[in-house]
Every structure is written in C-alpha cells, then in structure tokens.
Amino acid sequence: MLKLSGVLPALVTPFDPQDQIDFAAFKMHLTALRAAGVSGWVPCGSSGEYNLMSDDERDQVLRFVKDFAKPGETLIAGTNAPSTAGVIANTQRAKDLGYHAVLLAVPFYTKPTQAEIIRHFNAVIDATDMNIVLYSYPGKDGVEIEHEALDALADNPRIIGIKESSGVLQRAIGISQRYAGRIQLVSGSDDIAWDFMHWGADSWICGPANCMAKPVCEMDAAFRAGDHARAKEIMQAVWPAMNVLESGKFVQKLKYGCELQGTPVGGCRMPFGPLTDAEKAEFAAAMQPILNWK
Image: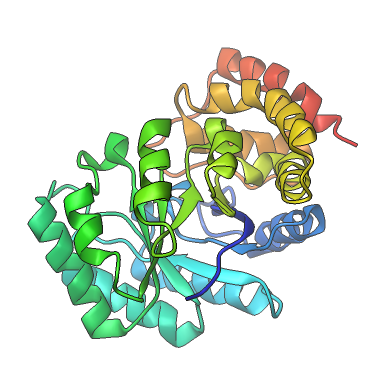
C-alpha cells in the first residue's frame, strides 16, 4: 500500500487577469510550498476550482504539477466528475501522466446511496487499477461515505485512505479504530488536524497550506518528532485563520492569503465572487501571526 505522510497541499489554481491559468504564478507558488516542506501535491481538487475548468485545462494542470514534482514527492490527482464514466476517464489520464493516486469524493449532484457508492468506486478500480484516496465531505456532497460503504471497500488494496472532512472528530476516531491497517486516516478537517494526528493520521491534505505552509509543515514535523506540545502551540496559532477560512468563501480566502504571503495567484472564477473589504480585513488580521512566522 502506498504510504501517505506529511502535508499535501490541496492546491489552488492560479488565474491571470484574462481568467487563463497562470503557469508562471503557479511555479512561484509551488516553489514556495516546496521550500516550506510539503511532502507532495494534490492538484485539481475543490480548492483548485476543478469544477470550473475544462478537461483540457485540468490535464494541463496535472501535467504541469507532475513535471514540477521531484522523485519522492507524492502525487495525488483530483479526478472527480458527475458521472462514473467521467471519473474513469479522468482517473485513467492521471494514471497515464504518472500520478500515484487519485482523490475522489462521491459523484457530485447525485447524492448516491451507499450501495451506489460501493458500485461506483469498484467500477473505477476495475477500469483503472488506480490507488484511491476517498474524500468524505458531506457538507459539500450531501452524503457521507458511511461504514456500510467503507466496510465493503476496506479490503480492496486500491482503497488506500480516506480524507475525512465531516468536521466530526468522533467519526475520524471511529475510522481510525475500525479500519486500522486497512484504510489510512487522512486529516481533512483542518481546524482539528492536531486531534487527527493523535488518532493516527500521518498525512494531511490541506487547503490552508496554500497560504500557511510554513507553520502547518512545522506542526506536522513537530508532532512526528514527538513534540506534541509544540504541535499544539502551532495549532493554536493558526486556528484563528483556519476558523475564518471555514466561515465562508474558502477558496477566495486561500487565494487572498497567497497574495498576503507575496505569491499572488489571482482571483477565482465565477460563480465565486470577490471578497469584500471587510472580509479581507478580517482574514488579514487572523493571518498576522502566520505572515510573521519565523
């Protein structure tokens, strides 16, 4: 089984003033994240506005990130689509490009049953033989990947992990205990990532890493080194900014945070709207300890 570890940023996609992908800004952004200590890359997820891009644009992003990556850096592609056939096609292209795994939520807009979820993921595996990190985010998808589905999928060697983004710590604990040694728990609820670490999450697919990579990578490293007090101290420092992120306009704030860090990545595509001056001021204030991070 592919072992997942460290901070894996759920990458934003930079856009220029003409709303085209800005690969020069992308390179600067990835270079800064690598210097901060990330362990790999997760492009074309929800933080990357994948649902607002064409298939060709998504392929361009996956190819660009793959070409930038160095040996030893984990590559996980977001290959979601509204249909199983679309997911299979996207996943096969990511595999052909050399990605190690894909990150998959349930097909959006359909609200599938647990039986349909099982059938969907098995169909993707049968067609592609690709490693899958499940992505359970009921707040966005409308359904949870429940134990019924996880029980049916847990012993498939291609189901390697689950990014748990329900925000419910009890569920994360239950997953860590029920599927120990079978499905890796991946931190996906950023504001309780320290708690996830205590319950066995060795990796963190982290949207906030786009604009606070230094502290979150330091937090991960401190925890692994056994310095849980330092890890908690960092969590307390970044929590206010994460809390503001979770209050709404998540992707817009990630991108504004990159601007504050000196690696601007442009705005978001419609229907995402811009931040108000008040929203910018609130997030900038919460980001101050992070901007001054040593």
